[in-house]
Length: 151
Image 1 (spheres, helix red, strand yellow):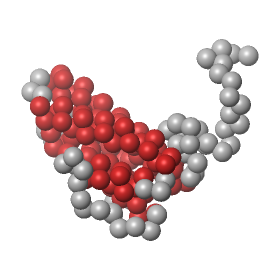
Image 2: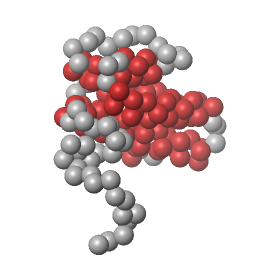
Image 3: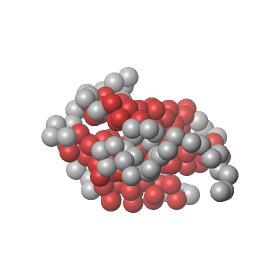
């Protein structure tokens, strides 16, 4: 299994790359890295990561497996689906500018998935309210929205 720190470095490398591997290969690597992140979650729960697919993608099957009995893990469901979406966009695009843009977005989505799962491994309540990186138990959320107004 790929170490979590290595996953972050590899996503950042793809995000910062202007050239090198073709965008389709980089997008496939981002999917693999997303799978590796979810493998950490499933393994931490004492389960064996599935090799199955859902809708043709192992990433979605791993998310499904990881969400069983853990409703707050559904906070990253759409993030997984968005990573698949960007992978498919890249596979269907030939325009160089669109490829760069979509690959950059896919890398950001993969990084978001990484941060959510890495945070959830440290703080089980993460995702109770949303998938923000704020600690759900220590946030002292009062239920009032300031809408960005400074006191």
